[in-house]
Image (tube, rainbow, N blue to C red; front, side):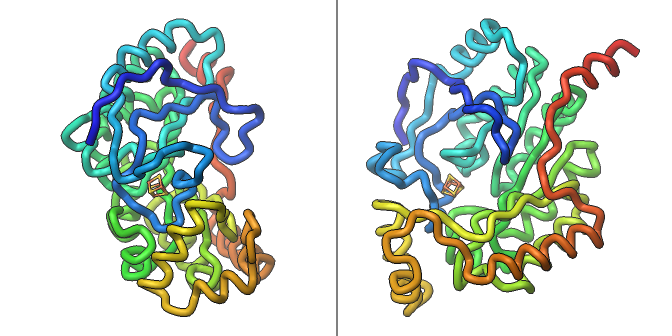
Length: 288
Ligand code: SF4
């Protein structure tokens, strides 16, 4: 772990953000302890040479306060795109917890993307933020703990994520699943997709958002293939034959998965997109 000082904290997200409805992105750390074998943040364009050397932005809270005070437009602040905001060291460092408290003071809507039940530590802050708008999305790529232990070796198992989802839903915080990436030849079975939807529904999820495929490029691809060789012998060759140097690698049965997914969500009454922040609705409800 290394301490660094950042020049800025919030970056503007190109509009419209179809996936998450974000206006600002907040990265409190660089690097991630969850070590998912497919992580896109290893790509060369992000210039993080050692992804395991976690950099902590020690001035993040001071920057956040200053930047929120200067924002003319209130929009959803997302965290969790380049690191997991609840990776293990957050327990000790507490940057995410403090950032949520500041976002609450400024009444900014929030979207948290995580794979960890450590998010429950901040349940009180999230419940307060939910009066404006708060969503917590858990990424689940496989419903099976053993498979996830191979593909997401540093993250808590999916079963813990579903349990955390239940507690958030019970506390009135909107929560759901980002089912992405669905790894070709690993997570791309109808059983896996339907299982994720059903377990999410049982855990009180309001939505499940899918992507039936993955991205692969430069360093990310090299790392992924190295890990496939260790945990899924023979799969690298299938990837190479099927995808070559392609960036977008869709599951071969993406259409079939999409049909099964849509049916399962319809049966359970689950939305297939993340609920958006609606400023007018919040302003009106706070009038009464
Ligand atoms: S949790 Fe997210 S950021 Fe962290 S290693 Fe996994 S995919 Fe990458």
